[in-house]
Length: 313
Image (cartoon, rainbow, N blue to C red; front, side):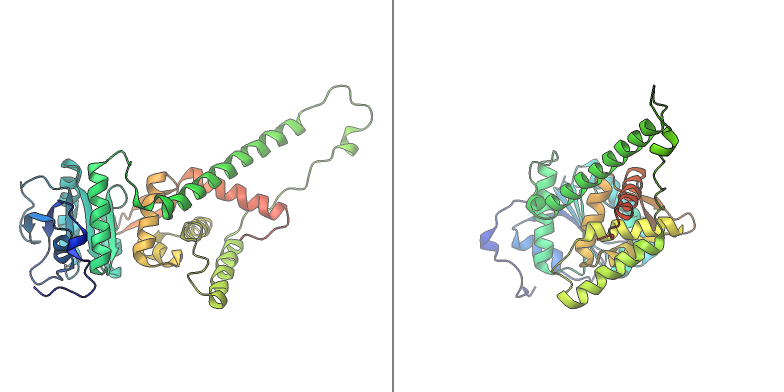
C-alpha cells in the first residue's frame, strides 16, 4: 500500500489504539493509513454487507461512507452507532457533503467525529480525539478546549446572559405596571407606558446574514469566522419564516468548512442550543431547530437590539 505524502510520520506516535474498520471493498484507504501512522491495530474489519458482529472491544470505530448508497447507510448506520455506544467507543465517519443528511440522521453529537472529504491528517486528528475521549469519557481530555470549545462556551454564556437580561426586563415591566401607593399628581401623565418594542422579523435577520456575507467579500471568508452565531441567525430566521433547515443547509449557513460546521452543530446540540427533528417523510434526513431556550434568547436579544436602535451584528 502506497503511503500518501501528507500522512503523518509514524515515528511520532505510539498510541496503541484498537479500532474496528467499516468500509466497502475498494474504498479509499485514508482511515487505514491514518491508523497505520498511529500504530493502531485493526481488531475487526467489516464491509457494508457483513453484519456488525462481536469482536474485540475497540477504542474507536472508523467508518468509510464514501461510495456507499444512501439506502445502505440508512439501514446499517444505526446498528453501528448502537454498537459504539454499547462498547463506549469513539466513532469517526468519513463522508461526502452529499451524504451529510443521511449520515447525521443516524448520528450527530456525543462521541462522533464527522469528516467531510478528509485528508489522512484529518483522519489522524479525529481518531486521536475519538480514542482519547473514549478513554476519558468525563471529558478531561479536550483537544479543542482552547479553540472551538472556548468559543462555544463563550457563545453559550452569552445566550444565557441574554435570556437572563430578558427575564429581568420582563420583571421590571411588570413591576412598573403595578399600582403605586400615595403618588401625588396624575400618574397617567407622569408615568406613561413605554412604546412597544417591535417583534423580530425574518427580514431583519436575513439582512444581518447578508451583511455578514458581504463583509466576507471584502475581508475574506476566514478572517471573521463565527459559525455558531451564523447558524443561530439562520435557524432563527427559518423559525420566523416557519421554514425547515436540513443539516447540510445549516453547514452552508455556517460559512466554514463542512467538517468544522458539523463539529459546531454537534457541540451546540450537545449543549442544548440546537435540537434535531426527524423528517417524518424521509427517514434519511433530519432537520435542525433552535431549542426553546435559544429561541427565546434570540428573540430577547433582537428585540433589545432594535429597542436600542442598534443593528444586528
